[in-house]
Every structure is written in C-alpha cells, then in structure tokens.
Length: 191
Image 1 (cartoon, rainbow, N blue to C red):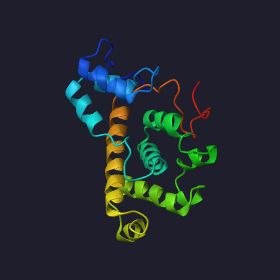
Image 2 (cartoon, helix red, strand yellow):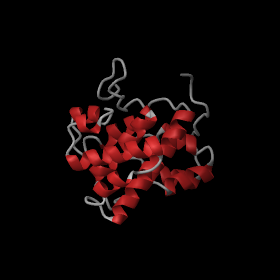
Image 3 (cartoon, rainbow, N blue to C red):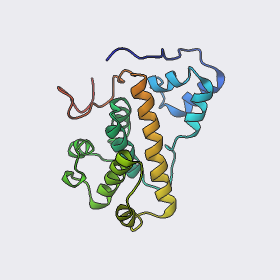
Image 4 (cartoon, rainbow, N blue to C red):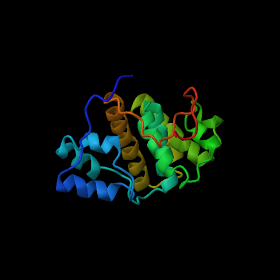
C-alpha cells in the first residue's frame, strides 16, 4: 500500500474545525488522520461529523461498538476498526477472544451471546446483500424496538461510508490503533 492519497489538513484549522475537533477528541489526543483529512473539505467534514452516531443513542455503547467493529472488519477498514477497538474496546469490556470473534466469518463460532451474535449477523447480511432477510428480521424484532433497529441500520450504513473513505484514501493506521487479528505479527494494539 502506498501513502495516503490526500494530505491531511494541518493547523491552524478554521474556527469551526477547531471547535469540532475539540469536541471529538479526548484532551491531549491529537486529531485523527481521518478527521484531519476530511477537514481538507470543511463542508464534507462538518456534514460527516454532524451525521455521526457516537452520542448516547437508543442502543447500548457495547452494541454500538459491535456493529461498528463488525462493519469495519467486513469492509476491510483496519484503520477505523483499530481506532474503535483502541478507544472503546476496554470501555465496552471486549475480551481478547471477543476482539478476535469480531473478525471471524461465522458469528456462531464467536464467544458472543446469542443477542450479540444477531448483531454480527445483521452486519454480515447488510454487507453481503444490502438488505435483511425476513427470517433474520423476525429474530431482530424480538430483541430491539423499531427505533433501535433504525439506529442499527443507519449505524452500519454510516460505517460502510467511513470504511469506504478510509480505504479509498489509504489512510495510515494510527500509532495507537489495534490491528486485525489475522494481520501477520499483529498484537492487540500497535505500539
């Protein structure tokens, strides 16, 4: 893989970008390459940041992260997967076995609960066919409300978009990010 296709923006940023980055990033953590790259087009940056679903929603933080991580893995976005595993994995109590399970083809072969495996199946279905079968939908509606199902669908779609962007731009992995478990020499997080 060659370097990033678009050079990320560097400070000084516009007032709006500076304010958005301050809201998005933990104190003392520099802005992600993804955010700085999107900031090259301030309109795209502001729309993408406005469309995010990282606030408190109708699903649990753990469910949100399972959908994000599975979607990013299915799309091959090691960049975004690694950032989320690094930032949120511990907060949602992901074990090393579960992190590996997020990157396992068969959801039934993972250590997740039956309810959580449904989320993996949802992500797999959306990725493979851009729809959800009636049989899978019947299982999903037993576990989540209509409002929650909408959030899950939009979340998976949003992270397909993020994955397309990170992959097409060939963004370099963040130094702190986790690596896909099947990457030769991978460790739980990069040094």
